[in-house]
Image 1 (cartoon, rainbow, N blue to C red):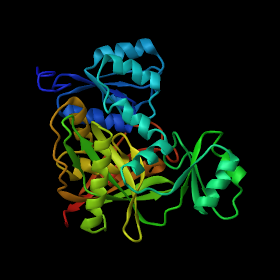
Image 2 (cartoon, rainbow, N blue to C red):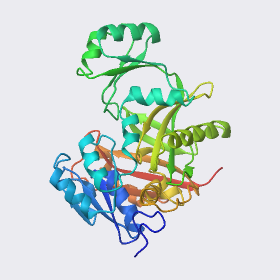
Image 3 (cartoon, rainbow, N blue to C red):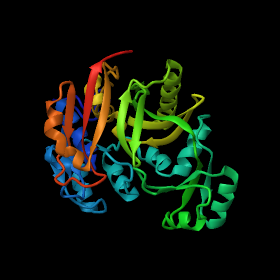
Image 4 (cartoon, helix red, strand yellow):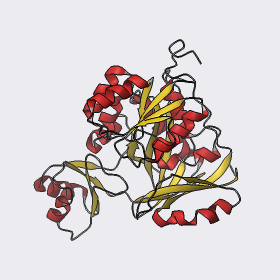
Length: 365
């Protein structure tokens, strides 16, 4: 079908969207693209990538293979990604050949926790107090300023609790710093929060921003366990959280879906914890409880289409299936009002996300 390039559309039906990364997020992006008549070409170095079985075609090669990257770029109309830690050279090669969205500049801001929190503060949005840590002296000074408990994190990489450690009273600072593996770090004051929440936002080329409802998240061993919507919080908290997400996505001049993870304090203040420049686990409930999912809206945005509705038609509880949880798939598939999503991974390991189930109920508010 024709139309790409005539009305700001980058990828029309029949076109090809390139996706960097072949995990479950890439798989769900490819599924959403297929619903819009768009083919996907997934690029990932892992031969067991679950997205490979969904995409129309795939390339299994290192992110540093410039010849394979060039061939990949030549085969697609635009490129997006399912993870934020894209090598700078990879992004540069692809950006020179095809539109890469969200733009790499957003990755540069969000890839470093110190840069990210400084940026958020520059918008007048609250975060936990923080200090840069490059040495034992820095850590001792930061702990003296912020107190204990405090959370020491690597500035780059790290997810699901990786690359961070809690410093409690009596903990040895040298041992805590050693856990960072020599990487630059950041110390964050511990926030006594009532809940961890997130907002999924999406923005188009023309600056239009839409946000999904505030979702309340529960973690187990630093991995997201459940996401519940609606949250227990009043409209004022929800409005504040959604306005924060909208302000951040606009300030980044971002195109696509972005997740903003936040703390709600006991006094109902809202503080930003982290930004994820991609579709996000805490937005999986949108597949079944909303008119248009986060995955479809991301595809729409990066392909230059109008954004879809973010309206929620049902209440939802999304539960991750971690490791052996997936073995209950038959019972889960038998549940009424439960939508089961399995990721096609061939080995269930401790801590590995194997799928999720979303349980729906009639909308309460």
